[in-house]
Length: 599
Image (cartoon, rainbow, N blue to C red; front, side):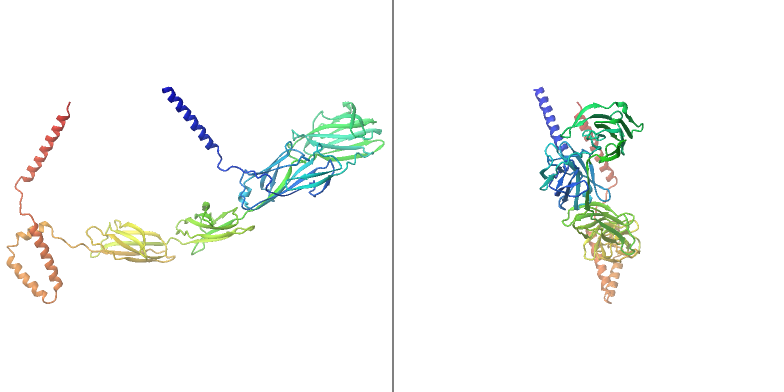
């Protein structure tokens, strides 16, 4: 049973681990490949960028593509587009290239696969900051796939946006008087290795003192020992028929690797020379150049300069970097203010960016905004200023070339008030009073404001306007007075507003000691009190009735107190006896509990 339980727990742990890995491995935002759906136009051009409808079988061509990305399609870093060349074409090489804007910023990086005929452009974050009017073009160098097409043929070529008919011209063949021809290409597997072929004396006519000199072009060096001159002839199909190799001693290579010479002597046959060069730029050039020269006693000097077919391609992209520039200033002095914090929202209130802070120039800039309406909301005022969270709206217009300029001001936090609580008779400051701060409509702004040891409440950062204090709790022994204490905060006024509030002591209530004294002296002052009462009545008849009423009130309070006062006096030692009784009882109770709990 225990083994089954352990097995079940182990299985559960493994299952949960697998599930968690599934969740962990899911990216937050998967890259999107748009295939060819962003293409708007494509055509076949010559290597100089001219659209043509006919080429020779050996021409280097350019597959040209235009693309447009709608404003409502967001392109993120890592998104891509993939195009495939039709089977009639082959890519000249697998050299990738960058798609850049006019300033050299990389829009995307293209990888080229000659074997599959695919070109993949992976976008950078360029279109995240240039989200409007997104467009571009790119070129891929290509040649005819000679396994699928031939000379003097019409070929339907579809580059992805519709097909077009291209005619392959008839091959003119080799001229009867050709003395020198040359070509080269980059190795399919090693972009730093270039293969070269030189055709000498195609007709096979005798050339006396024939010498061929080859000059290695820029960014290359001759691969030592690769130069080999063969002898033979060309048949009716212009195919070279090998007969022999020229003695290697007739070939001399320069020590610097930049040239070599083939000394034929008297050349009575056709010759084909093969050799390789090594790129010194890691194969990054789109093409490489070599040249050659053939001399002889009975011919005019012949020179030739050729390039390898262009490989890779190039591209250009663009987008509008629509932006807004906010400047924060002091409302009174127009001094720029740093440290203000904002958030940016769209017209629907969706958060675009937050924690945007004005710099030392009082400015903040937000770039890469799509067309539409937006608004800033201040979330933190500059130090010493009042927060103004009134939305500041603006509009981004399509294809705008400069940033939208908006400005916002802040009012300095000059509004201060000090309330002092004092005794109405003595003028002494009173602590412990509670107040509520209200606006002029009676809306509560701050509560439980307590006067300090100096009897004061100090409030800062008040916006201009009308305010009032309402007392909610009087100091101990004082009457509550809820009459509003009104005051005004003026705009741009740096002075502190001072207000005060007086309190009156509560009416005095006779203490028990005073009542006892009154009782003990009642009999002694009976006749005197009678005389005093008579005198008070006489005074009241003269019009001082308020004083008489007040005296009557005090007499009534005194009589009531006398009726309720105690008539029992404690006996000597009475309080001590009660204390000892309580102490003894407690000790007996504790002793009983202790004995009860003993084992």
